[in-house]
Image 1 (cartoon, rainbow, N blue to C red):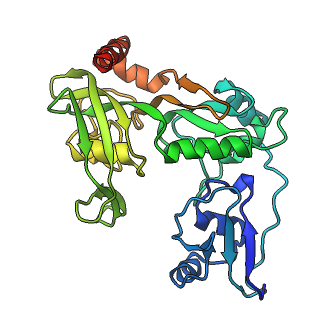
Image 2: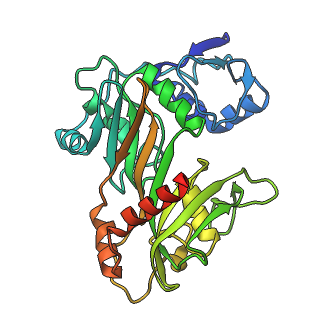
Length: 333
C-alpha cells in the first residue's frame, strides 16, 4: 500500500482498541511501528491524534499511512467464526435477557471476553452463536475481566451498540458487583476515591494508586456481612470504569478480593480455610437505558464457587436484599 487510506470502522469493529483493530486488518504491522506512527500523528481517528488504547466506534474514520506492500497486507474480512456446538449451547444457556436490541449474558469466571496473546477461546469469538434470526452479529459494548463472573451486555445491531456504548461512556449505568474480601473495611459503608494508573513494578505491570498522574477512579462500597476483621462480603458500585478498578481499590484499602493473586497475593487468601479457588468478584446486576426506551435491569445468579465460599464463611444470601432495601429507603428520605 503506497497511498494514505481512510478506512471506516464497521459495526463488527466497534469498541475495539485501535491497536487490536490494526492487528486484525494489518497483522504484519508490528506494535512498535504502530506506536511510532501514532506518536508522529501519521495514524489518526476522525482527524485527531489518539493512543493505541483508543476505543473505536462504528462509523469513525481511521487514517492509515502508506505501508510497505510486501511487508503489510490487509487481512480480508472474515465471513464469521465457527463456534463449536458445545460452546454455542453453553453460551445460549447463559442468556439472562434477550430482545430485538440487547442480549445479556451471565459470563462464567475463567472465560475471556476478548482474545489476546495465547487466548483463543473467548466470548467475542463465539458471538455468531447468538445471532439467531438477526442480520447482524452481536457486538460487545463493555467488558469483564476473564476471572470475573456475571452480567455482560451485548448489542444486537449497530444502533443499539451506539446507544449502549454511550450509556457506559456517560456513566448512565448502575452496576453492582459482589466481592468476598480477605479482611474487612474499617467502616461498613464508604467511598474509595483513589486515582489509578498502570505502573511497572517488580511483579510486572499493575494498576496502582498514583496520586500524581493517575486517572480519577471512584468506588462506593457497603459491607453486606463480615466476620470480624477476617473477611467481608461487599457490595461495590464502580462510579468510574478504570481497568481493574475494583480489584486495585479493594487491595489499596487493605481488603484484597479473595483469590486475587495479581493484586492481593498471599494477602488475598484466608489461611486454614478450605475455600474455592479463583477470584471472588461477581458482576451481580446492571440497570441502564434500553436503546428502545425505558430502563433495562438484569441480575445474574450467584455462581457456584461464590455460593460455596459464602456457605463456608456463614454468610446469609438474603442479607444483600435487606441491605439494598435499607439503602433504597435512605435514598427516598
